[in-house]
Amino acid sequence: MIAVREGWELDVMRSAGRKLAEVVERVREAIAVGITTKEIDQLTEATILALGAKPAFKGYKPGKVPYPASICISVNEQVVHGVPGKRRIREGDLVSLDFGLVYGGYYADTAVTVLMPPGDPLDQALLDGTQEALRIGIAEARNGKRVGDIGFAVESYVTALGFGVVTDMVGHGIGRRMHEEPSVPNYGKKSTGVPLVPGMVIAIEPMITRGGGAIRTLGDHWTVVTSDGSRSAHFEHTVAITPRGPEILTTLDPVPFPQPTIR
Ligand code: MF3
Ligand code: CO
Ligand code: CO
Image 1: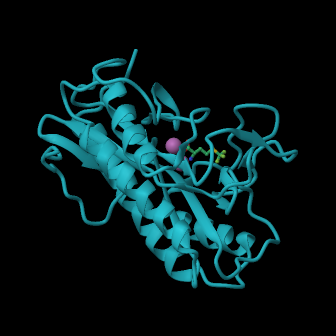
Image 2: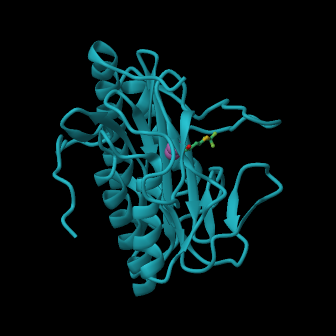
C-alpha cells in the first residue's frame, strides 16, 4: 500500500523539509576549496541536531555495512553515496551533497550539486541540466499523472542534451521511512506506472552523467561511481502531491503550486 499523507502528517513533513533546506543553506555556505569531506559531515550533523532533528543516513543499513555518516558527498565521477573522510575539496571539483533528516517521525531527503571554481563549462552544463531535469520532473508530480510521466520528462530532457541517465538507482516514496513505495525512476513511458494522487510524498532525484548511465559500487560497499569515469550530478527534492499541484517540501521559499510547464 502506498501511503497518503494528509493534515497534520503533511504539516510535520513540511517542518522536516524546511529544516533540511536550512541545513543545505548552512552547509553550502561553508564549502570551500581545502575543506575535508569529514568536516562537511561534522557541520551537517551538528546543524541537523541543532534544529532538533536526527540525521537520517547515519546507521542506515539496507545491506551488510551501515552508512557511517550524516551526509553523502559524491565528488566528480562519484554518483551517489560517497562516504565523507580525509578527502579535500579541490578547485574544479563537481560535488554532489545528499542530505537527510528525520523530525517528528518523518523523513526529508534532498540533494544539490555544486561546482568549485573555476569549473569546466561542460560540468556547469551538466549541473544546470540536472537541476532543470528535477524541475521538469517535479512539474509532472500532479494528481492524474503517473510515475512514468516523471521519468519520461526527466529522461527526454537530459538525453536531448546528450547526457546519460543512471537507471540502476531511483527516486522513491518517503514518509515514516526514508524509502517507501513507489519507486520513481528517471526514465519511463508517459501514462504508465503508479498513479499519482494527492497526499503522496515522493523524492524525485535525477542522477545524470556526462557519459553513459552505467554505474558500479566501490569496495567500501557504498560509493557509487560511473563505470566510464564520467562526471555526474544529482539534485533531489522531497515533493508532496497536493490537490493544487506539486509542493516542494525541502525548500526555504516554497513555490507551492506551480503551473504545468507549457511546451
Ligand atoms: N539520500 C539517499 C537517497 O536519496 C539515500 C542515502 S542512504 C545512505 O535515497 F545511507 F547512503 F545515506
Ligand atoms: Co537523497
Ligand atoms: Co532519495
